[in-house]
Amino acid sequence: MTTAARWEHFPHQADIGVRGLGATLAEAFEQAALALTAVIIDPAEVAPKEMLRISCEAPDAELLLADWLNKLIYEMATRNMLFSRFEVQLDGNSLSAQAWGETIDVARHRPAVEVKGATYTALKVAQQPDNTWLAQCVVDV
Image (cartoon, rainbow, N blue to C red; front, side, top):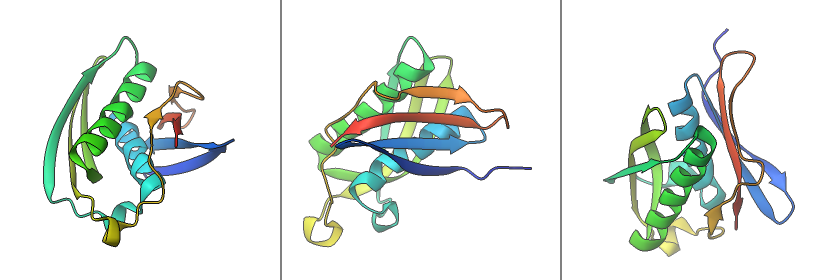
């Protein structure tokens, strides 16, 4: 039985949890990034017009997830962009990725919130009993 890649949110007091699930660890990281975008706006509303390369390293997969999401948050804030498509490549504890998106048009996109950062709260990266991968943490909004 194959589990389709997906993302979801989970409640956490005043903040919100983001969770990516996938057949591979890279796919789970991609889905976690989509869940991050979905905190702000429906990813389907963001056109993948521009591509940006992002890379990061961390001592382990959990810290790598937090660093990955924080790099995306930084790029969204400094470039005034939203992202809707991601391709992640992992090599040990190094990540290289491409993110596609567009400049925020507040009137058209109507962003719901601003994500301030990915936290270590509920931070978890693990292979599940069905061999799929889970990548999750809480983001500060």
